Amino acid sequence: MNNNKLPNHVAIILDGNGRWAKKYKLPRSAGHYRGGMNLAKIAEHANKIGIKELSVYAFSTENWVRPQEEVDYLMTKPIEIVNENLDRIINANIKLVFKGRKDRLKKDILDLMDKLENDTRNFSGMILNVCIDYGSYDEILTAIGKMKENTLEAFNENLMVKNPVDFLIRTGGEIRLSNFLLWQIAYAELYFTKRYWPSFRPKDFDKALKEFSKRQRRFGGIKS
Ligand code: IPE
Ligand code: IPE
Ligand code: MG
Image 1 (cartoon, rainbow, N blue to C red):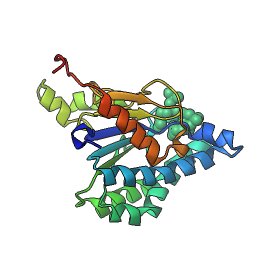
Image 2 (cartoon, rainbow, N blue to C red; image 1 turned 90 degrees about the vertical axis):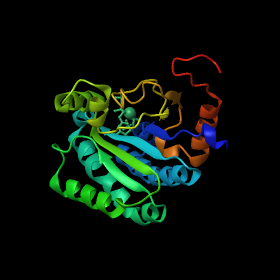
Image 3 (tube, helix red, strand yellow; image 1 turned 90 degrees about the horizontal axis):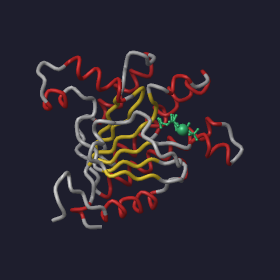
Image 4 (tube, protein in one colour; image 1 turned 60 degrees about the horizontal axis):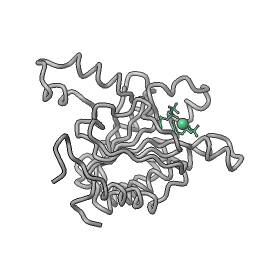
């Protein structure tokens, strides 16, 4: 692939775990488990092909309204899966960062998140932002509250995810953003696929990137 046309920062809305499970007559938790395992695989692949930053939506500020059992599973299992895959992440030199509100998470999960961030803090490979209890409204309001002066730089500085997104992928077939990185995707190219997240393979990622490479980004200018 032509590296000039590779996005620096890719964001993925990991959607469709529940419908994947339903299709195979499994409990929704099985979909979340497979989805979590798939994240390790796709992150490894993205890093290998030279993506600099990958931000994934794992749990939104709105997902708390789901049944308690599902919330409990989502609040613990994905982070444990990341921990179980730590060797792969370390071998790949991936720097893991958790984004989102921290005030509604349980202490043992926060401790595990801290440990994972610390274990990978000095790595120079791809940055993997895992967004948990993340929502753009929350991020933007918090950033506004912290701003010392009314400038774009001061606002950006106070965001959780600071770099603009080049390419946004949503799996699962919905054509919406569901409160993910609304500010950062201002000039991103958007890509929606019907494939459910647990069955989204590295070759599907490559196919999406190929589509990105054909897009002409103009940022308000004219065709060059
Ligand atoms: C995405 O899968 C994971 C989270 C939102 C946490 P869903 O659980 O939303 O799966 P569907 O959309 O019901 O298929
Ligand atoms: C978006 O998916 C949130 C995550 C993938 C974490 P949802 O399944 O929660 O989105 P809606 O409710 O269909 O918009
Ligand atoms: Mg969904």
